[in-house]
Amino acid sequence: MSLSQRIAMSKAGIHAIPAAAPRPASLRLGLATALLLGGCAVGPDFQSPQPPAAASGNTYTPTPVAPETVSAPGPGGASQRLLAGQDIPAQWWSLFHSDALDQLIRAALVQSPNLAAAQAALRQAQETLRAQTGALQYPNVGLQLGAQRERANTYTSAGVADFNLYNASVNVSYTLDLFGGNRRALEGLAAAVDYQRFQVEAAHLALTSNLVTTAIREASLRAQLQATREVLALQEKQLSVVDVQFNAGAVARSAVLTQRTQVTQTRATIPPLEKALAQTRHQLSVYAGKLPSELGLPEFQLDSLQLPQELPVTLPSSLVRQRPDIRASEALLHQASAQVGVATAAQYPQLNLSASYGTSAFEASQLFTPASVLWSLAAGLTLPIFNGGALSAKKRAAVAAYDQAQAQYQATVLGAFQNVADALRAIESDAEALSAQAQAEALAREALTLTNDQYKLGAVSYLQLLDAQRTYQQTRISLVQAQAARYADTAALFQALGGWWNAPALADASRPSTTAVMERPALAPVR
Image 1 (cartoon, one colour):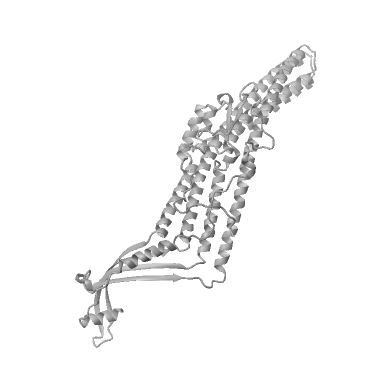
Image 2 (cartoon, rainbow, N blue to C red):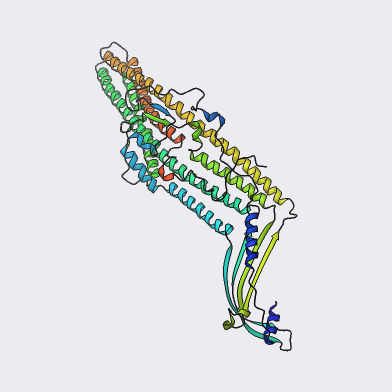
């Protein structure tokens, strides 16, 4: 009924017929039909990919790694045993038995801005999912109140009329998810939540691993500095002996110059080590969420760290469920699969339902009277007929994006298995290298002592003494580096295996957040 018709009827004393309420039986039938039609969802159903077939065994390398490494004297020389099929402790860094490292990591987990950013991104994804769930799964209900004054032409002898119009109504609209497009969209958003959750795990693992490896690097640099200074002290002592011999006429001036050159060269290696140590300390401060100028950062020495003697190594078939980067890549694959469903559903009809119930009157006192009641029910069907192939192209693009995500997932899995294989071989080789380097350092130290005594007696030339000094300096530094490599590669193994995946605080992180949206029957090629 038009506005002018309502005005004319009002002046003639004619009132609108009271509205009849919709029949409950019709509403129940419509609701049942909507629920029945809403049971299907086009597009591929997703299921977590299975581990690679080659990962069914208990080894990561072509040939088995020795279950126990060789030992060597000194820091980092303990023998390590590989425990196949065992879980990694949640706080794996505690296996190094360093209270200073434990305290640093606990403080960094609270203060790290990178971890805070990842957690904020997770909250954002969760709230986005909640918002879209409310918008897509439930009807949109709104209340509208209005009051206005108008002038309208009545098309009668009365001409124009000024009047007030008051209205109050409740409007309801809902889009039936006939082909599952909304559910696929929510499935994709839920996969995005999973992705951000695994990104939080990855940020936690990266932070703790970086702290451990940086602390080990600091300890290594300190040990190298100490070794270099010890070698420099020996060379300066020998320079004093050569000076005495030169003053006595026992050696030529060339011997003095050569020894001074050796001392100067050794002294020149100290500033680069000090620079590297300072930069490492700065990096450690930043990882801990502090400025480099802040005090209170602990100092780390190799002898303050205990090499873990038992190394849990999970089975290859379990690695894909532990590594956060693999789980994150799987979530992206799931999201791409859901987008194929969204693009497919867009090619099918869409049914929109709307209803309103309210009251409208020319005077406020007439609101909510039977004669002022208005209601409406409406249904609209939208069917794409021609769009220049846009919808088909969007579906093909979604399928291509799925193929890309699947290839990236496979690449992530391959890289993860390579990381573990590299770390296991490194642990085995590091132990052998440290054992050999410890023997070389002991022999070089003994040879230097013997050559020095013989030189004092005139039994050997100065060149022989100089060679013995250089050999000892090289073996001493190499020994420190070999010791640090065992600590660093042990931390790299824990990181490669997924670190803290079994932490109680993350018990829900491995659960898919899409269980409320849809089941996951099978993973099939998307076409």
